[in-house]
Image (cartoon, rainbow, N blue to C red):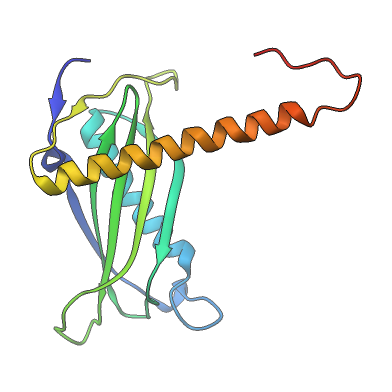
Length: 175
């Protein structure tokens, strides 16, 4: 695919109000609920950028910085940080604000998702290149490339470790 799109093309903000049904045993909003919100925002961005269906392939990192409480207004901000042949890294920032106050938003978490664009049969399909527009977009792209390199190196190291742990006398796996 030869076309390209800037991060602003698919950047979104989603907001919701949390409820008691989403709480954990401590009375805060369950971390899984926050991951679900972040994944939903990332999914919209991935589908917008790729121009069609895209599925979550990995949650590369999720950092919880502050608790989210019942009644908080939760905002997710998401954009494409990097795009490859068929995969994309989507960065999500999560902020909250109490429902009954107009205080500044509090940064409560960040996440990096990897999505793969799929065709009608579920196979990977090409996505547009990413065309950074701002210095912040350039920084996000560089950092996403570092995370991708780490993911690939980790996968290779794990596979190499599995090969070396083969039981004696077992045939060696083929590359």
